[in-house]
Image (cartoon, rainbow, N blue to C red; front, side):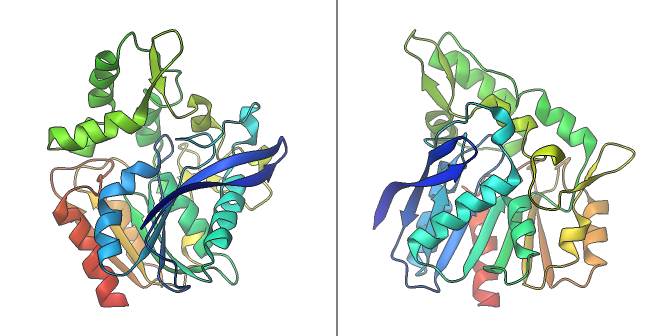
Length: 295
């Protein structure tokens, strides 16, 4: 069973649509919530969702507001982690889950870490894909070279070429997987040009401390964004998957994570930077095996 649907969520602008895809039937305690990266969309989890459904899970993948099929805000300042958490909570309530396992790539992992650190958290187990409790300024600057800029292309082929450059660190190996990424990243405009589904303004607003209703991360003297105060409060089991060549999750970051009293496993994926796509069978099996081990 696969369902594509949306819910109405509330913000300072009124109501907005948040789309989601549900794989499998919710039985209350079998839900995995999959949350994508800052400029990505729910289809990043299409491959792993099929594997998880075969293991009896109900997999729920939302398009965070401003991405994929979900609505865009008129005022970019309304993009905030607080808003994202409210919207995802509404999706979970719609599905009927009491607790969820959380799989988040990059931004999706940060949101999961923030949710997992809260009192009475709804997260049972947390899987963070290529993100840790510190966002290094150097990695953020690299991502900003392509994310956060309005992308306009004269043809689909031109857009695909640019996506290959932007997402080269993903380590994608097959044309099938590249075409999957292209299909759900690019859309045609009425004038015949192409752009991305994601609102380019999302990149710079998510962690704006002036637009938050929750405790926000710190920024150190080097411009790194610090999430350690969330990490230290997590009590659920955590799995970290990360690219061996990632500039976001370094060996130093992983070693520091291990110094905290968190039930924590980590797996490095060779030949990949930021971030593993979770399309390859070997990447998927790391997650499914860990879920079996900790179930």
